[in-house]
Every structure is written in structure tokens, then in C-alpha cells.
Image 1 (spheres, one colour):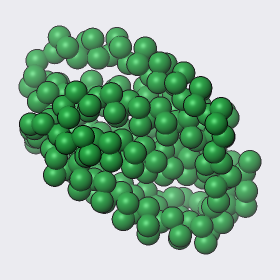
Image 2 (cartoon, one colour; image 1 turned 180 degrees about the vertical axis):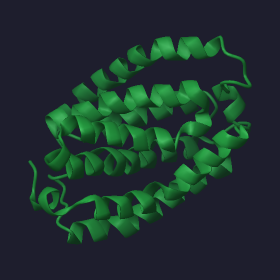
Image 3 (cartoon, rainbow, N blue to C red; image 1 turned 30 degrees about the vertical axis):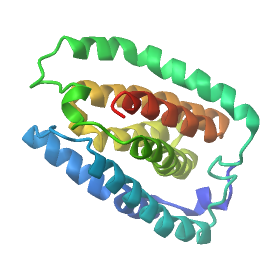
Image 4 (cartoon, one colour; image 1 turned 45 degrees about the horizontal axis):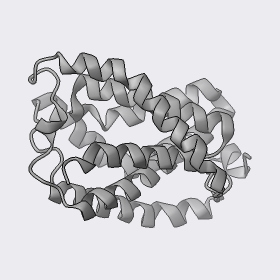
Length: 220
């Protein structure tokens, strides 16, 4: 499963890819967390901006990584219809694992941990919700899950690779408050370990997309 890219790619390439893919989201996330600015984190305009931003980054990084030797198999993107069933299992596992965390968040003050209602401004169009639920899971799981884990696991071990992947994922979700960030750590661990152990990315992508859709559809 591991090709020549995992033996040649190192921290330099990884830092460049992560900076291009997540540099701005990490900056925005830290800025929002430090200023406690969570109002209207999700708007119609912000969802479409995220879709276009991620498509642009994929258009830039995709060919560049392909030239570096990254292919569909190395990233776990070879599609199989049976990927649907583990994807549903991952959704249930993530929901069950995050339930105690989200339950705790329900009892916290809005100023300490913002509710999802506080982060969504007005109604969202169905098109925007579907678009972000299709594009964002591919973008995040390819770069923060498959790519990061594949680069690091050969030289530093699977646990280190998954933990770095989770740390990056959490860093650009800090605007969701402590409970949201912890929940994303839980989800990142589940999806990251799934990919690290199986080498199959589509179940993680599908599970991520379904969770995004479930979370945002109520506002469409």
C-alpha cells in the first residue's frame, strides 16, 4: 500500500502542503478563538467561499502531489462499493463517541462554548449544504488524514502520525469552542485510526460527508 512517496516525502514537503491547504483556516480559527468571535461562523457566503477555496487548493496541490508520486492507491482512494458499509459504521461510532462530549457542551454557558445555532447565521441553501458536504470531506480527509498519516507513519510510527493528523484537524476547528474542538479530536482519532489500519479512505470521506450533512441540513 505504501509507495515511493512515503519514503521520499519528509517534513519539508509536509509543512508546505499543510501550509497551503490549512494555513488560512488555522489562522482564521486561532483568530476567532482568541477573540471569542464565533458569531456567524457558518453563513451562506462562508460555505460557498469554503467550497471554492478548497476546490482551488485541490486544483493546485493535486497535480503537484501527483508529480511527487502520490497516486490514488497511496492515498486510499481506490473506490469499492463495500466502502459504504464501514462508512455507516464510522458515522455511528463517531456519533456515539461524541455524544457524552456534546451532552456536556449542552450544559455549558454560551460564552464558554458556543452552540451550533449561535454559529449558523440564518437559513442556508440546500445547494450550499450539499456542496460543502461533498467537497469538504474529500479535501480534509485527503490532506489531513491520508496524506499526513502516510508521510509520517513510515518514519515515526502509526500513533505519532495519527496524533499529528488529529492535532492539525483540531487546530482549524478551534472557532467551534472547546467542546467542538474536543469532538473533532474524537472524530479525527476514529477516522485517522481507521485509515491507518485499513488504508481505505473512502469510508472516512463518506462518514465525514454524512456527518456534515446531518449537522447542516436542519438549517437548509
